[in-house]
Each structure stands twice: as C-alpha cells, then as structure tokens.
Amino acid sequence: MTTTFPSPEALLDAAGTDLGASDWLVVDQARIDGFADATGDHQWIHVDPDRAASGPFGGTIAHGYLSLSLLAPLMFDALHVEACALVVNAGSERVRFLTPVRAGSRVRAHAVLVSAERIPTGVRARTAVTLELEGAEKPALVAETLTVFVPA
View 1: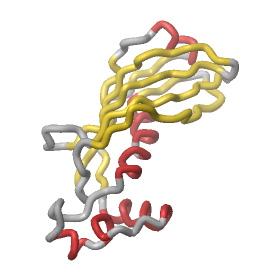
View 2: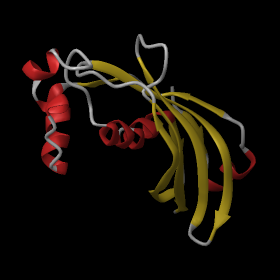
View 3: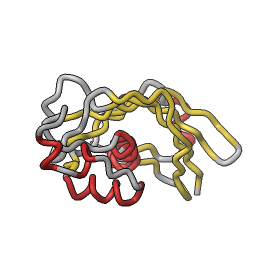
View 4: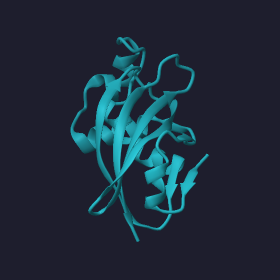
C-alpha cells in the first residue's frame, strides 16, 4: 500500500501519520553476494552457505548495512510525494539491528511520519521505520530516516 501526498508541503501537517507497509521483498543469496562484492565484506556468515549452515545463524545472513540500505527502495513503495523534482536520502538515526535476515527471507518496511520541517531546499521528513521480517517475533531493524523532498 502506498500513501501519497500531493506535494512536499503536505507533509508539514501530517506528523503522526501511519504510512503503512511496503510490499514484501525477498533477500536472496544473490543480493547478499552482490552487496559483499560492492562493499568488500566477504565474511563467511554472508557468503559461504556451506560454512554458515553450521554457524550461529544456521545459514547465511544479510549484512546489517544491506538490510539498512533496503529501506530506501522499500520506502518508495510505502510513501509517494507528488510534485517533487527529486528525493534525497539525508541519513538515518537510532538504527538498531534486532534480528538477522537469513538468505531467502522476506522483509518489508512499515513507517510512521514522525515530523516534517521546511528547509531551504524543500521539506525534510523524519520517519520511524521498522524493517519487518516475515515469520519473526522481532523486526530485522528499526531506524529513523531523514528524507528531503525537493519541490518541482
């Protein structure tokens, strides 16, 4: 489900809005391997399925920063702001990795708009995001994200 706002300005009065959840995304081994190649982090718990099968997680797991990086595309699925020239990721705060994401797992982002403020380039929104992990008691991670919506 996508929550849509007609403009960046419309975010200013929407603090507390539950933005809902994105679609589910499979975090497969190919994605994990690609992230390992991009970052140079080839630790066996991420890229060696045979060794990881007898490791602490019972299989390979996604890098924490891979899970965090998935918030950007998943949030585009949950939140759409019209009349934008561009949307810029301005950072993350209060990030906590709670549950490892095993290869083959499905995740989705659930978000609440915490606040929005005018800045010289547009509107900066603070969003509380939970990366839900299908079938798990706890989420994969929680974070607050900062996004700048630049008006068209």
